[in-house]
Length: 254
Ligand SMILES: Nc1ncnc2c1ncn2[C@@H]1O[C@H](COP(=O)(O)OP(=O)(O)OP(=O)(O)O)[C@@H](O)[C@H]1O
Image (tube, rainbow, N blue to C red):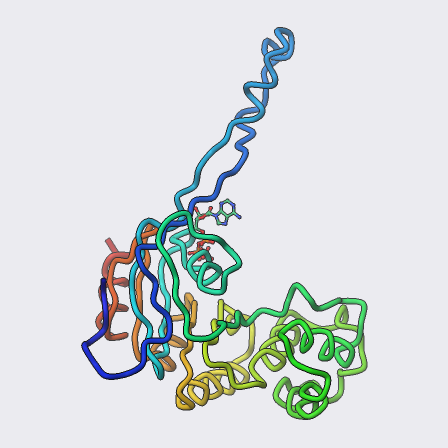
């Protein structure tokens, strides 16, 4: 198993030889006229395809780690994060977590026709906060998102950056022990990105562990103490951000 260094810190997430396979129906090519004539549709139309999205990934995350996860499109980053949170089941291997990891992405729970105000409650409940916790943190969420003037407008009227700010503000208000941020910072503007990166550092400093999936090497360098690089479902490198990013960039330039 790959580990950063033999140290005395508490392991928080152990990913042990994890494989994820998606089974999908491949509709294949459009049936030809000849197929249709010979009623040969069934065999053509329903073919099971297996996408082997993770192929034996292993590493250990420790407290205070903030781990950047990099790799080209389709390399398995989101799949790995979803597996850590338990949204995607592993077909082989196991994941052990010290406490329940939170995936920063209350997106699914938010409703575009409701106001930002209502969505704070909805998103907060979806993240597992109590009503008291939501009320206590309400002002913080609104000011962190910088949406004071827009909070009673329906979310439909928000730009994608404003929506992302609200999601990040809701999800990060509580200190999580294990927080996973999947590309949420990509749409925010520079000021917001800096504020979110500061919050990620704060979570990390409070003995939390953060995973940051991003295509922005700058965000990763600014916030992460360690980087793992995935390629076609395998872990290529795990270590110091500068070294891993340099190797990744070199591989991309080839
Ligand atoms: N629900 C799904 N059903 C079938 N295949 C999937 C599913 N989700 C992901 N995949 C496949 O698994 C592989 C890994 O996808 P994943 O989304 O984890 O990549 P990623 O590194 O997060 O990519 P990106 O940088 O584009 O977000 C890809 O080949 C993708 O097509």
